[in-house]
Image (cartoon, rainbow, N blue to C red; front, side, top):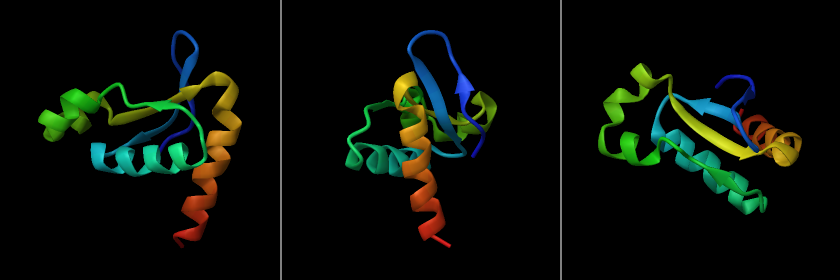
Length: 82
């Protein structure tokens, strides 16, 4: 997973996942933390998951004002998985 990447508008990528399925897990974590998120690549990668690497992965977007809280929620889950 990469560092947060700025995108145009009010949304920023908090993570980029290798597969759409990993992005689904992260979306669940964020939603459980009451953080709104988007998976803009969900439709395409849901139908054609083999394109994930060509597209640079599946982006998990959050609102700019939620970025720190989202990064912390994902960090806590990642630390607990060790």
